[in-house]
Length: 216
Image 1 (cartoon, helix red, strand yellow):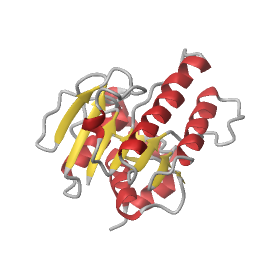
Image 2 (cartoon, one colour):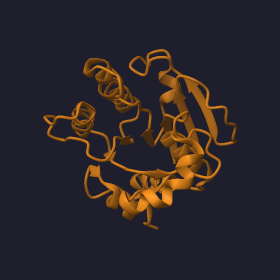
Image 3 (cartoon, one colour):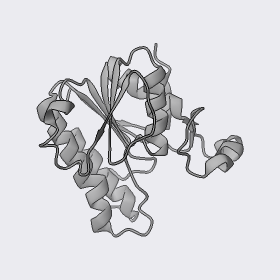
Image 4 (tube, one colour):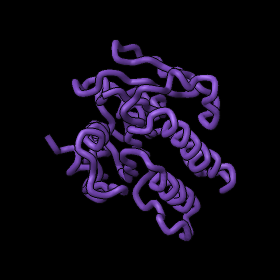
């Protein structure tokens, strides 16, 4: 399969990218980002795009793909709802809409997070905005749309972009006792399997992601 991936310079995107590069089922990866990842690989090419909401100048480069793994994101800490909406709703929905036109048979996977609010009415601002994004993406007529809601994630070996740095690697086993998570390689494998096999529902929680990652 040929995959477009966003967020390769962040923890989740980098972990998924490494799984895609190692997985023999993935033939090619196009990393779409605002800055270079610094990685080189025979499967990997990069497209620097300042604003994902406007792909008019690069449409040819975004055509001919089977899937998009949208892992780009940002913390809502210190942001207004309006600014966070631009990043976490307007941008992924606009990018997905463009990709649908260019690749109507595509599977689109969007990373949100545990406790995302599908009702769009909860108290947590980030959860409402992410819920709006999930709902909008589900309405797009892709071959498949899957919203991943992972929680605590263990970095993949070789990652450079790790939130919390080496401390996270050390304390992960303890945190995992109280906040069950998963390996980022499992998240990447589950995304690949979502393209191969589909999934039974459009919103996948931690247990669903684990189960999908284990499919052969």
